[in-house]
Length: 294
Image 1 (tube, rainbow, N blue to C red):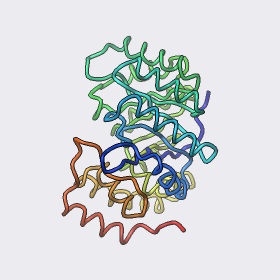
Image 2 (image 1 turned 90 degrees about the vertical axis):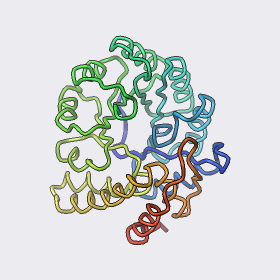
Image 3 (image 1 turned 30 degrees about the vertical axis):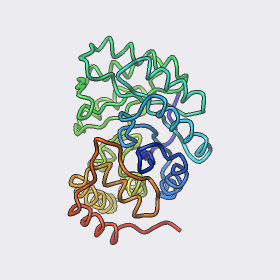
């Protein structure tokens, strides 16, 4: 059970001005993302505002994206939820419509034991029937699992890998060494060059929506030993991310995509519009750095 591909955009979710899902925005967004050379889409994750959606809405996005994008690249469905039943239901949707893999944050809010978290992942893997990726993002979930606990979860039946969104490259390399062939994807965009140099099976990130070619290039350059090229590309990523710290990551990316002609709409509340001063900086960056694909 292998997860195909290396570079995945953590896909935004197009929305209308009233914050309802804009299904007709998925295709132009996917067109833009795939024009940058990525291998696939990671659908319904943090960047996709999934935790602000109902289970029905999340399922609708998974179904629509699969229908529109099947055959264009690999697809991973993020199905994680606070409730095992919700995660299992979404995993079944993903399996039904042909996703290549599923991913899930650990159950959050309550302080669950490692045994309870393992049971949650077993249930998702059993429902999905495709490789399951453990999604470690403690900065958002508040679930801070130790290295040995993550290794334990990686060994569960049906688990095909991990999406590691944290800053500890040493821990990431330990997980990869202990993974027994399971794929380890790095999810901290601003540190991707470090993971590529240390050894990674790929990357999954928010800014890949806009500059997926940058991360394709970093991985290729690092593997070819062209460190200067990799550094130049990571510097481009840094320039964008520094501005997104001011705009808000999802808010800024949605603005940038709209400015690039991709109708993704606003973020859902309680997100607020990005500050105008920060958006002016983003405009200036886009004018210099983004060349629209033909």
